[in-house]
Length: 371
Image (tube, rainbow, N blue to C red):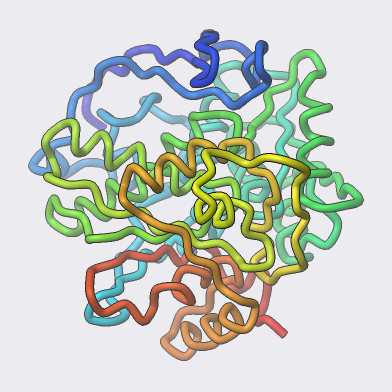
């Protein structure tokens, strides 16, 4: 890696302006309880002509990252971009070390935790984020506890255990697991490796777009489609496109297409209603094959909705039958992808009027073929 000095970052609350040093274990805004954002200060641009010879992982974009010189890397990033149709290409993030895109953010969280030396790390997850944090904590030598909702696929829970993490199965759905982890996060000496509340995760996921930009020779497609539950990949994409535009490295921002399962689609409903956020009691929705995006009340809902609108993007929803068909179709093309990871292909696979990139963001071995 090159010798680029990374200025210190600080947490700040986008709602009330509260601030905290990034060396604090405070996992949310102490005033409103909302997620932190990250103030990274002025940063140098990532120049396309500077990338030759750099480390072949997401850490090659070090000017854009809030951390440098990682000790816990597993070589994550630089996944292939493969054309599926004349207009739609797929980024194969299921080829990451733990077989999902969550490695992009998990390596950031584990690296922050390693530098803070907490007594324990806790995380909640529907499976993939917990697996990724467990793997990177194992790499860092940190004790890790992962809270998952009942019904999490046994392939994912087996992977979590294999990395040596303590697994806590919580009765109820995704929000119940999150509540249990947040309760544990209040214990002194605990680092909450939340892929939702900790903004370092978002700065890891933004490398997804930097890689597309590099592979397309310094350009981006007309649209970027992403599956949205908590919205961490979409918000990372919004960060990256804003940075690239601000540095004059692209001349326009692509539209962000947010894809949700029809069965659990609170953000899509809010978008169509013209709402800025979610209100009222959360709608738990119905069971869905896309377990990774079955989130009835994402904490960053306002940011996700704003990011889609600012990009002139939209929300699309897919049915359970469309998910089944998309998984089989991709498998027939040589890609075995988990049921959450096929949602974008189900939504935009037939697009013919503009260029789109979709993520295949989790391996089919994590859930098996949909019944």
